Length: 246
Image (cartoon, rainbow, N blue to C red):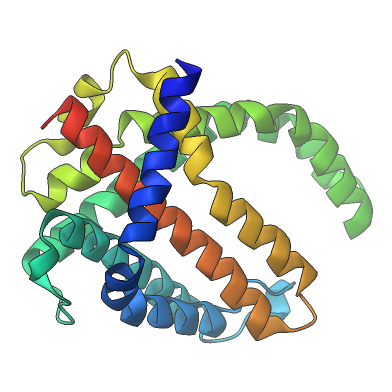
């Protein structure tokens, strides 16, 4: 199984390398818009509530929409390389964006529900006269044991819904139900594969942390890492769609 998973992961990155230039052409405008949105929102800065810029909310919306439309565009190119770049979002793109926002909202809700008892238990610390540093330390100490479960649960849920995106681009009905059913029994392999395609985002995040003094460059490096992971995740989803639902 290990060799099979490794071979599948290498195939994902090999296909991305072979399609690097056309994928860049398809994705460039959305990557630029995502960068603009991130800079507008102030994401990547150490902010207090008083220092949040007035452009934070519209910038965050631009950032998320650009990433989602770029994600759709990558799927569309992998299915039909002759489709080209579409700058005006079609109704199919809006459906893709809407369903993916719903998926993320549902996943967030499912993952956060188990943390509610922890938040209730932490209420006495909020009433105590603690400094910001002490409160941060207390919160970190309380949540750290739960982080592995949080990450494992999130990746597992994303794996069960891995096929939603390729099904949406193909305009299939009930993509969440179909993906949940077709990925059953494949989750150990899909879990490991998802860890593998997250590598660019992790590397980008570490490089961005080193480049924090140069803010624009730090944001750009981090965003490129995230977008490479989006493209790798897209290729993985298309490969798995061909195996499990094609």
